[in-house]
Amino acid sequence: MADINDIIFAGGIIATIILIAWRNNRYKNTIASTANNHFLPDDLSQEVTLVYAGDELNFPDEIIITVLEKYFPYFRVLPGEKKKIFLMRIKKFISSKTFVIHNNSGFREMPILISATAIKLSMGLERFMLPHYTHIHIFPVEFLGLHPNLRVLTGNVSGNKIHISWKHFLEGYQFPEDGQNVGLHEMAHAYYYQNFITREDVDNNFADQLHIFNDIGNTIFEKEKNNTTPFYSSYGLTNFQEFWAESVELFFEKPLSFKNTYGELYYVMVNILNQDPSGDILL
Ligand SMILES: [Zn+2]
Image (cartoon, rainbow, N blue to C red; front, side, top):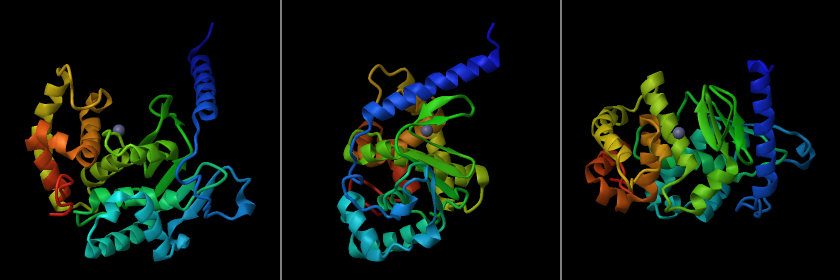
C-alpha cells in the first residue's frame, strides 16, 4: 500500500514526465534565440546552470539601448529625458542582482528585458530597486515549483528570488494586448512584497495608494467572481494577491478597456504607479 511519500514521489515523476513532454513539444524559437547574440562564452556551454553577478555584466549603454529599442516598445516611445532615467535605473537594477540561468546558454536579452519590466512598472516610483530580491532565476520553459505543493509554473516569487520562464516571458511581449504578461505579473508581486511585507525600501506614495486599491479593488474582486463575463481571468480571481498582479498586467496591456470597465480602479492604478498607459506615459 502506498504511503504519502510514495504518492509524492510518483507525483514528482509524473510532473517531470509532463514537463519534459511540454519542453520537447512546445519549445519554439524566441526573439532572443534567433538573434544569435549569446552573452556567454562557448566554453561554459556544458554547464546546466549559469550564474552571473549583475555588477560584472557591464553591458555598454549602446547594447542596452539596442535591445530596448528593438524589443521594448515602452522604452521606444519615452521622451529623451525619460529614456536617460530609464537607462540609469536599469543599469543600477541589473548591477544589484544575480542572474541564474537554468540552461546551458543564455542571452543578454534575459537580464536586460526582465530588468526592463521591473523598471517599466516602477518608472513613476521613487523606490525601484527591489533590494529584497537579490536573485533572478530564468528557466527556458515551464519549471517545477516544490512548495507549498508540486506544480508546474511559468513564474513565481519566493524568498529572495524571482523565477521566470523565458518562453512565457517573451510571449507576454509577443502578445502585448491580451492582458497576460508573466514578467509584469511577477514584478507586481515583488513590489507588493517589498513594500508591504519586508517594509524596507518603501515607496511612500505606492504604499499609501495601495491601501486605496485594497478598498476599491475588494469590491470589484467580489463583483468579478460573480460576473458571467469577467474582465479578469479566472486565475486573477483566485485570491486578492493574484487580483493585484493581474491588475498590473491589465493596466499596461489593456488600459483603455480597463478604464472603460472599471474607471475608478484604473485611476487608483494611475495614482499607485504614477503613470497612465492610456495617455501620457508619465504624469
Ligand atoms: Zn501570481
